Image (tube, rainbow, N blue to C red; front, side, top):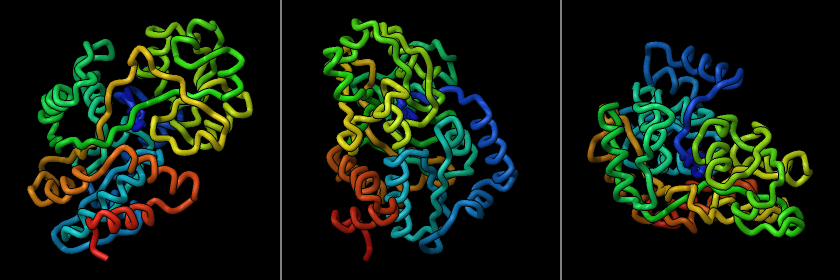
Length: 337
């Protein structure tokens, strides 16, 4: 998740988070927000660009692609950067910790494009408009979810581009040994076991409905605390492997679970909504047909299996996200060599 978020993402994501990212608290988020505000000031995207690392591309204008702080988002941002650069724009990738930070920057035009997850962003914006207890608008129906997302996004100056087949959902993993000892295959099994669970996740898990609140309400899982090690990070998975934590929030496209001896528990009551990948842009700065067409070619070809392989190349093979992005686009005939 996939998703910050559901990351509702990433959060893959989740992501991606991956369900709607809600409120980031604590010193880390406050510090990140302060740094972001200082860096952006009144200059919009250009000040981000100055702080955002290498740029590439042509002279049609500057486009800043936002990324959340997990592998899949970073790789997708690099893919977006390359494909938009090939369309003649000068591109920069800027990584922010999570949706609570990058979504406001997207509204303001301080970043121009982000790879997103339909259900996650829909619920994030839903909560932002209607409060944390708002009636959910996302579901397993991608058409209805995207329609709801557009209704929420457009008044904020955001343009939602078409979703593709590639999907990443939040997921929860435990060690194989823990699953075997307590006879766990599903999250319902874990709830019935009455085992107390310390969860390795992003700190926003405390309030996101797909995460701690959902695990408690839907499955009756006793979550005693959140260990803020991030969504599916190596540190989070290592904490579960070592027994410091009992479960980790990751995504269904996590390619390194076996490396840590972990196994996913099935979301048998469908706490997570389908989170199809789609680009979201600032309508004023990046809402033109040229960028939409360039990203549309990618969306049409990107698959869930591709996401797993992209994650594997970075997380297991330790390749750089920008190198993985370039190789992927070339393999699909979508990049200039």
